[in-house]
Length: 57
Image (cartoon, rainbow, N blue to C red; front, side, top):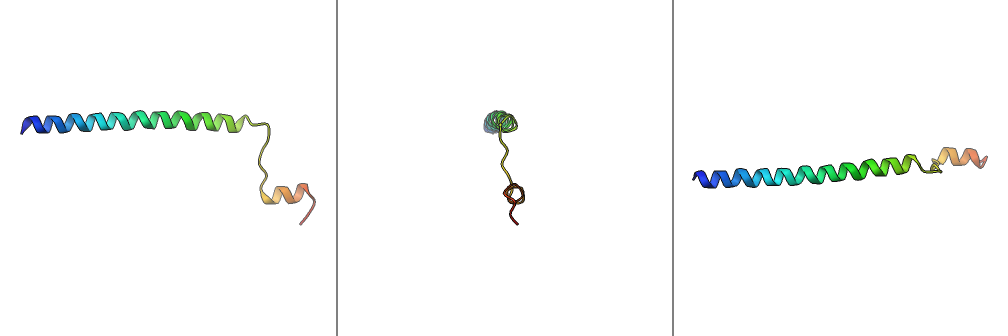
């Protein structure tokens, strides 16, 4: 029974490590996407800003 518990602990630790690694990768991707968006030469307008720019109500 002790072997089975140890095996489950190791399996849980492996899954936890894998999830943490994937979260780290996703965090890096999000950081890069935010940096790319903030460095964009253009900004998207909302409906109000577009109407003001086109001088329509």
